[in-house]
Image 1 (cartoon, rainbow, N blue to C red):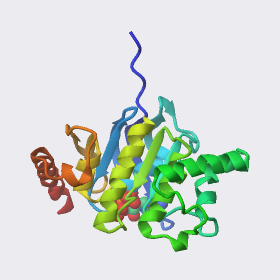
Image 2: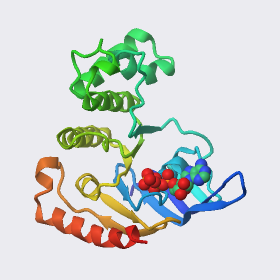
Image 3: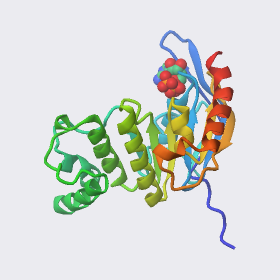
Length: 261
Ligand SMILES: Nc1ncnc2c1ncn2[C@@H]1O[C@H](COP(=O)(O)OP(=O)(O)OP(=O)(O)O)[C@@H](O)[C@H]1O
């Protein structure tokens, strides 16, 4: 029998406290535990300011827990882990580099020869629908296209873990739907694990295998919903499934109480 692999991410009874310069303490997370399995897509929803981004910073190793432990692939986090990729709300593209050089940034940074990195980048740009835009600069692209560059720039590194903090919240509804489909395709081909923070609980239900509902600050995991909707999912269709509507209703009932706290 093959042994079950350790989870991709574990937060084990984590408390995270910030101290302001005048000595006041803010407890962002308290006795917070979560598990993300290999290849799993987990969405995190919760009231504003509860500690969602803090959770991601702990996983990256940018923040250390005050109490408890964070583990990646079974090992305690000690430094920023190269197996982790990020996509945030603000595009992390370099404005002074063209699309090809943006997409090739990771491999080149790690020492891959330029011609080989460019070849790889061309392939990823094609996968995200940007073939023909290699020589464009970010300011010449729409918001959705810049997001595609950010996805190519991240997936080219083949991260085993992908952390996303409201990556599509600045996009209009149609572009957002396209990007969600794009993400699901890239993720399903990658085999990686995703933690996706969002304010939009319908986005969470449509994308994820598991939705974590956090409490108001200090955040704890209030509920975990397993989203048993078939894959592959098409964003414009999944929203009309009766079970999707039922999950969204249940999660909103749970979240509503925390939002009002
Ligand atoms: N470096 C820091 N120093 C002090 N307080 C911090 C720091 N980072 C976060 N906080 C506080 O911790 C709490 C949680 O912040 P966090 O950004 O994780 O919340 P969030 O749920 O991601 O917020 P939002 O929904 O607005 O994106 C907030 O009260 C915030 O002000």
